[in-house]
Amino acid sequence: MEVKVQEAGVGLLDLLLVVAESLKLLLLGPLVVGLLAFGVGFVLPQSFVSQAILLIPPPNSPNSPSAAQGASMMTSPLVLDPVISSSDLFKDMPIQNARIELAERIKATLAKDGLLRLHVTANDPKHAQDLANAVIDVWLKSTVPGPQDRADLEKRLSYATNTLASVSTLLEKLSVEGAVSLGRPLTRGEAGTGLVAVGELQARYLNEVISIPRALQGLSRDVVKQPPTLPTEPVAPKKSLIAVMAAMGTGFALLFFVFVRQVWLKTKQDPDAASKLARLRDAFGRNEMVMK
Image (cartoon, rainbow, N blue to C red; front, side):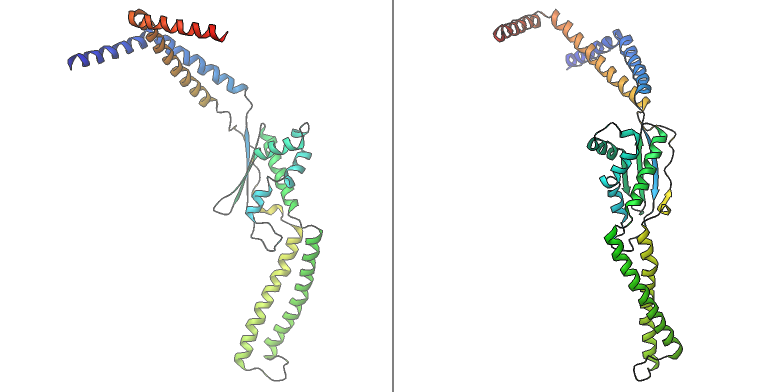
């Protein structure tokens, strides 16, 4: 038992001795590599993110987009293609490659609070802000109804306007006279029920008369609660993180190299191990000759 403890102590001392003998290499190597990696971080392309927040109202017609649909549309060709054609960043790229690259730069997410958060990445702060504004503007234009949808909405608006006028006239007549021209006067209870029913109809058609013109115009810039920001600091590359990771990786690699070298030197000094190494060299030599 004491022999095992002594052997463990000697082994630990050997490891510490190896580290102490190579301490300069183990310290200076990672430091130099970390400094070089930190310098390379200044040469790598930087990434800036412009952020915008949109609050999309609930759809007031079947053709109005929801917030989830808006988030999906912002990375669709319907929005990407006009942005690509209006930007100089993609002028020398095939349209399919430009779509892929631009879609990777756009991140539109719908949060639990109902807000749509748009993040657009570019290598320049102004480019990031301009791209974000372009994405929002093109998407807002896409919410304007097409010819067929516009015709349907205009028919609904005309019907709702005429019906609202008729319902308002009827409600006024009920309020003033307390009866409807059905050949007999209404009781008080019947008149009250009629007023409530006609009032609900009036509110319904009034809502359509107000909401349909908005649907015809599409969403406006009012949904943008926070305009795209002009970023001041890059989000990548993180130069300090690159330097630390490079230094740590180099440190582990050098430590492994030092221990392997020490084991190799000790193995060469051991007669039994030396004979095994010789046999390994012979075996590898024969394999090389066979392969040739």
